[in-house]
Amino acid sequence: MLYRKHLAQAFTYKSGRPPEDLLKAKGIKKVYPLASNENYLGPSPKALEAINKAKNEIHIYPDTLCSELREKIAKLYHVNVDNTLIGAGSSELISMLYTAFLEPDERVLKPNPSFMLYKVLASFMNLQCEDFQLNPDFSYNIDTIIEKNTPETKIIIVVSPNNPTGTIITQQQMDKLISSLRKDQILVVDEAYIEFNDAENSYDDLIKKAVDDNYEKNIIVLRTFSKVYALAGLRLGYLFAKKQIVEGFLKVLKPFTVTSLAEKAGVASLDDTLFVNKSIQLVKDGRKKFYSEFDRLNLDYTKGYGNFIFIKTLDINKVSEAFLEKGVVVRPCAQFGYEQAVRITYGDAEANDQVVKVIKENLDLFKRK
Image 1 (cartoon, rainbow, N blue to C red):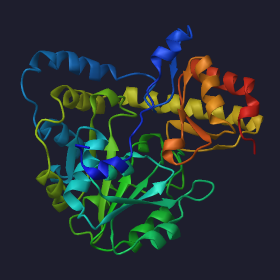
Image 2: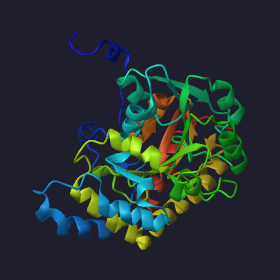
Image 3: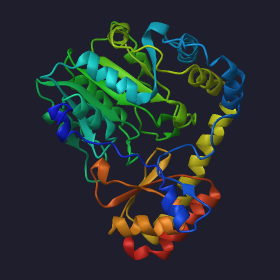
């Protein structure tokens, strides 16, 4: 083979895009895309307006540092510009993290089940990425993380709210985890869904600690414009960290990866608080609907804090097919490390009603409490 030998064992990331051809072949005209945790409202009107205004300048190379957006984020979160960085989605920032901070004999520690891209990207780069298991109820067990933390562990990743379960880390757990870190380690806290988190026992804002250049522990807070800001198709992510950590990222920053349209849309999205609030309310309404219906049906599901819900199944293939027959595209969770479960993004009232209808018609395919 011509490609590098280790890639023969690499993991392949499979997206949750809907099988449009299959749906068309079935004669299904109305599709409810609930597989990829996208914002069901679509993009912010202000973001669309900004893109429209900037479209005549796409012949000009973008600003590699995304200075306008970087300064906007710094001002919004009351941090120095040097403590932030913009990337072409969280995926680029994760790749940069591995490239800049991991030696070949060092490893990553991540939760399971959780977002697979951490393991996928590590396998691309021939790096070691190991799992720590969540509790049976998908809550975090900090003792498990501490037990799995070896001298070779350089980066520890936690995702809160976690994907695909929606579960969070509490304040007590976060304090214990941070206290256990060595000074040569980096804790990455992936907060892709943080705007949807209204849990009373969640940890306090970590940004202040992350950007404190004198703080003895190393923390990176990772965020995205893909979810509450609805810019998944433009690929835009950002992080907060100490200046010296950001400098490490800058050592491996590729030029022009974030497009000018993405940057302009990001700036505009941060100003559209009305849209953000509508997006959050849509999710809260979906949660209320599903919790009420699923409790009545006695389904085995996880109450989480993302823009999605995690439901255990008895036959995931039949469940997926049942949803597709009604035009509902959902996400089987095998690639996340859990074979018999489905993740469903909250949609609008019509989409959510369709989900409940499919479940009621196929109740024997779902695990009950």
